[in-house]
Image (cartoon, rainbow, N blue to C red):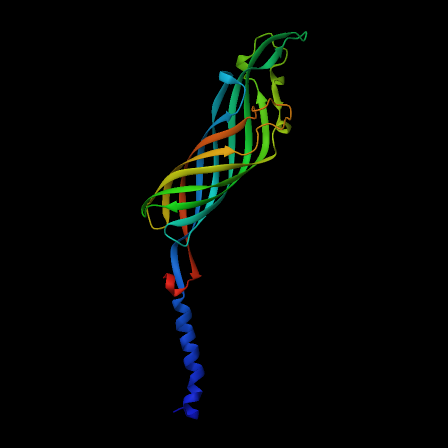
Length: 247
């Protein structure tokens, strides 16, 4: 039976229960948020092009940072920011002239396209301390610059001005394009919060390489790349509220 004396203690008991209950809903995690830094090696080719064996793929470098978020052991999501060079070259694509403006040769053209990239992917983990994972998603590519040039050592001695065979072709390519990407990776946790990793990604552009409208039917070149990513990953412990059913 409740008395006036007992009723006075009810607010204190409620506050004590709420404090204990709220503490039980907070869980500390060492695997919620990860920051990574990585260096990249890219191999870039074209599909649907008309250049035949005159086209050669190219290797290039890049780097970036990623944020990986997960509240589950198996699943997570990654967003990032990166800088990539994508390169390829074509035989006999730059006409060379002498001092009296006569064409004397045609030499190989090298293409270098620089992109700021924003990848967004979902990831599925297969392991724990030594983890193999799969990921897939989309990548936004913002074109920073595009160059077409001839190597100076490939130019004949009588070339009029060797420095003039470098061209800015940024306007020939879409300023923004998207790529589909998928890959597989491996990571090893040296400590509970620090890991080294390596992964492979396949990327294929959804937009044509060029903005030209007069290309032959079926000959709309699109870049695709294979990327090897090497990096380190740090875990950031974060407190967050969790339903007891999932603890």
